[in-house]
Length: 290
Image (cartoon, rainbow, N blue to C red; front, side, top):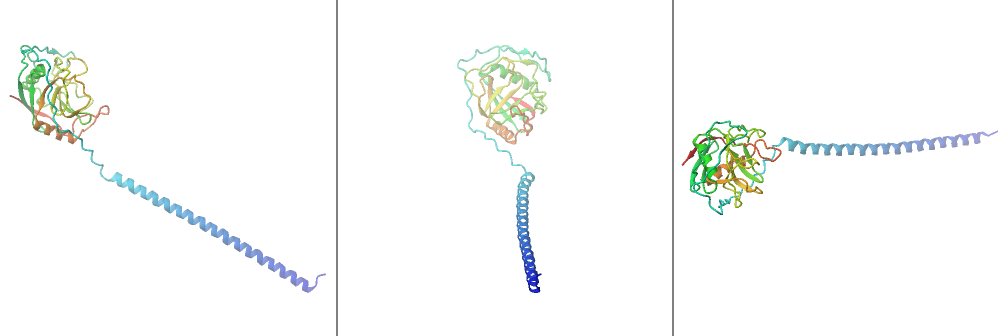
């Protein structure tokens, strides 16, 4: 049987072991607590970093979206004029022009076809297109395209162009303004179909070069399909084939008007070629011929 001394020593050792276990448990608790705190700190730090990053990104996006859109890049327009082409061989003077009734029967504005007999192929005609954007003086050259000049002058004297608007502006690649469709309304899907009710023969020749200051007739891909529509080149005309009759030139005053129209941009660009109605409307209020 254990003595009292032995019992006291055993109790002491048991108490010591209990104390050791408690200390060990407390130590473990402190370690676990420190680990949890450390993890919590890292999580909080991560959340803070994420919030800061997210807020920073939102601020940038918001600034970009709330600020006004950057202005469109100003188009580059050459200042050097393109010289008028010259025929290698002059046309007979006078000549004959075969003006034919338009097979489509589309004539939004009734006019009389010009006389195609004894058409002069020498000399020039001064014309001023009066428009809502400003006056555009032109010089028509009969030696280049006598039929186109004959038709244009005839239409002008019949007030055909009065009230019509220029429906197609190009600012890249082919920098030109196309006009002369009496049915143009500003709708790029519909404009460009109207004419005077007749067509004229093509008068293009290989020496033709298009560029700033050149006045030419518009047409479809079909031969001899020109009518009342024409285009005024105020800048580059890269890659345009020599298929369109050049019949005159644009004055410096007129080019300034076209430059201003071009720089105002295109209101509703066609996704196919980027052309469309000019933002700054050009509507003819009258045409003078001298």
